Image (cartoon, rainbow, N blue to C red; front, side, top):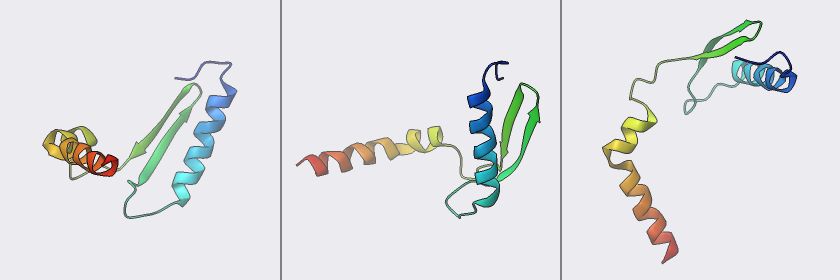
Length: 74
């Protein structure tokens, strides 16, 4: 929810909606719609079929990233 005095927050929301409705890329989740009813705003994205970031991190990705950063440091 946006406060009544949060014009900047609404402007950012509006800009994000306009951008996401025009940008299409295979590595980005699609924006299906949005809600803009007064102080109630929200974005509706497609379902991520392969899980979410938390599930990927739990599946060992974080260890791979840490190993990669260790290689970069050496």
